[in-house]
Length: 200
Image (cartoon, rainbow, N blue to C red):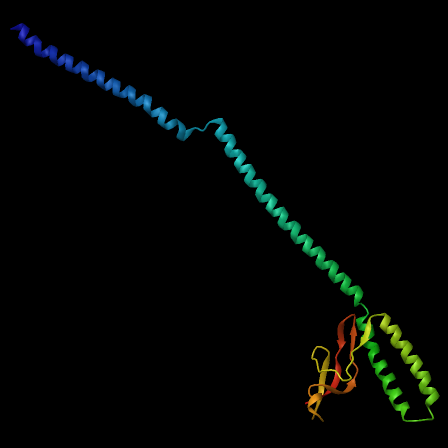
């Protein structure tokens, strides 16, 4: 009887031992697996950290290089622009002065036209012509040029129409018939448009 009673107890003890062993093995397995899975996620190797730092440094170098190249290009453009502006100022620095002298040239032209009608002033006309041509030559050396109008087609870049005259023939339509006031250019830049009468 006592043997029969002890047998189920022994079986129960064996089952409990087996369960305890399985539980402890499962816990051991879990403990072994957990650190292996978590290690790569939380800690990087020294090589990986160095590689990340190198990539960041390379990115910073590229950004700074890009900024430098942009600034260098902007400065180069600025330098070219200021040199061009300076050259333009030097070239056309006398524009204001020469524009103020233009009415004197107009007076010379009118005086010469009036002298053509009189024979008495022939010697004086020659003297004025010499002064006028000398004056024009000096101004020409400074870059002043007369805008030609005789027989030319009307061009708004150089001429200003102050009168429209019926064309005597078809071939002169759109051409300049008379120049009322001479126009001038300074180094290829128009400083005064020629005032003209145009055939229509």
